[in-house]
Image (cartoon, rainbow, N blue to C red; front, top):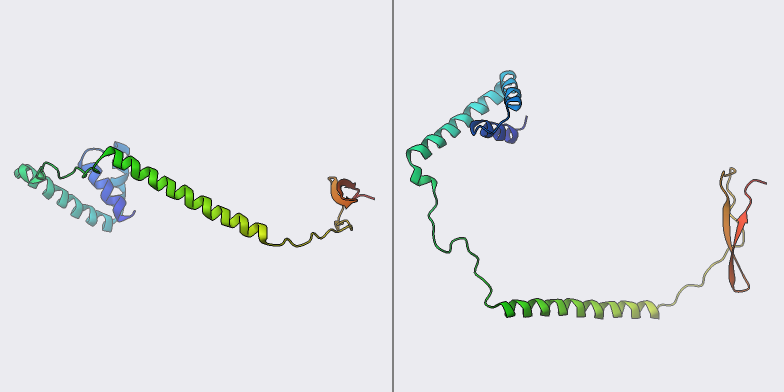
Length: 151
């Protein structure tokens, strides 16, 4: 068992949140593993010391409450936040439009290689159990033709 898992189980057991079945398994593991038993003893002593300290000095267990310690400083005005978000959205959309236009222009100006057509059918080495089709071009049109693979 990992040390982190052992620590979590021991803390849960000390707080009374460990189910009885898991507590029995933890006790069985501690009985069979001396290193885990020593670690459990150290963790239990630390938890007992922390509990005793909190019982003896309850004022030490609380943090000082300052008025604005956890509050975030708000952005000045609601309309200013709205304007900033609209400006950011406009910048993102404009840059996407400009960059996309450049990409389309670059693609349109690049010449395409001429298509290569093969009139010879591809024949498999073994007969296939399904029908095969081929695309053949002729007189400016394309046709789909069934190829019989089983002669």
